[in-house]
Image (cartoon, rainbow over all chains, first blue to last red):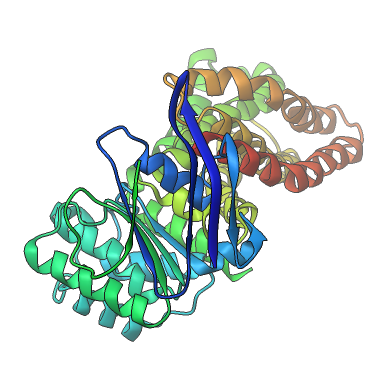
Amino acid sequence: MLNVSGLACSRGERRLFADVGFSLAAGEWLHVQGENGSGKTSLMRLLVGLSPADAGEVFWRNEPTPSVEFRRDLIYLGHHAAVKEDLTPLENLRLAAALDGVALDERGALAALIRLGLRGREELPVRVLSAGQKRRVLLARLLTRPAVLWVLDEAFNALDVAAVKLLGELIAEHLSAGGMAVLTSHQPLPVPGGKVLVL
Amino acid sequence: MNAFFATVRRDLLLAMRRKSEVLTAVFFFVIVTSLFPLGIGPEPVLLKKIAPGILWVAALLATLLGLPRLFAADHVDGTLEQMALSPSPLGLLVAGKILAHWLLCGLPLVLLAPLLGLQFDLDASALGILTLALLLGTPLLSLIGAIGAALTLGVRGGGVLLALLVLPLYIPALIFGAGAVEAHIAGLDVGGHLSLLAAMLVLAAFFAPWATTAALRIALE
């Protein structure tokens, strides 16, 4: 369903990568590996359509991207916290869903936060949470926003052992339900199988 | 359309959590417009003559104060990125943000203007025209300002650049907005001035969100 061919990216004079291609079908995931500065994040941003590629194409369900359909099926979590410090986790989740045009009631949002281990923190401003807890608030969006393709850039950063295991479970559940995932990480990931792309 | 209103609600909620940022612009407007009558002294004829210009220039500068923050916070914490990848059209979300900016930085000026105009010995009908002109003009300022805010997003020293970029574009609004009140005081018809302001507002409402969206996509690359 996701077909990528001939992607190339350069930063200034420096060529980061060229002719990167892969394809993913339902239930498959890709682990993008590479040393610091090898262009993992750049590849993620090209993939989701945040920056234009020097060359190459990304096809989603045999249609060129970016398209509205692709954005509906996609969830991208990058390096940024992407949560509002002045709002509570509950407000963050519900407003993010409303902006995406997804219906999400308070009970659904609460269930997602509890699954991520934020019980009792849902009414606190995000500003007072720790870095790992902020990350968990962001990851709760994986549960509240139905998406087929998860693109997670360094999603395992700042997470404790329990949260790493939990995120591994979430990804495994997502894959077994026919989802797809593209992940970058320096650690070995607690998700079985998976293709590997080394930049 | 739900995403549009959700964006407005979100930005208003965020502003309520950080009231000082909103109140800065409003206090600036109140203080600047009050300094002139205090400095010039009780000369009703002179005050009445300079009132429209001063109130309008103060409104321009007060709007400008809030502009750098329009997209900056969302850009820094990554929520702008999420908006750009949202299934909802980015233009719609941007339009929502611009409306929220006007509700927070423009509407208070419109509501305060009749009160502040009293200091300049404007009569009731002139205050009415002033309020009406600001009601048409301040959304125009927010719309044009949003383009500038998006173009200077992430640029170092963007605040100064933003002022240099946006203030010249505010000149037509200033001329016709202040001109409407001056014409009324001189006993002339103000229909032309207000119609032109309204026409510019319609034009900006159509093009500004689109141009802002294009500039934001470039800033995000």
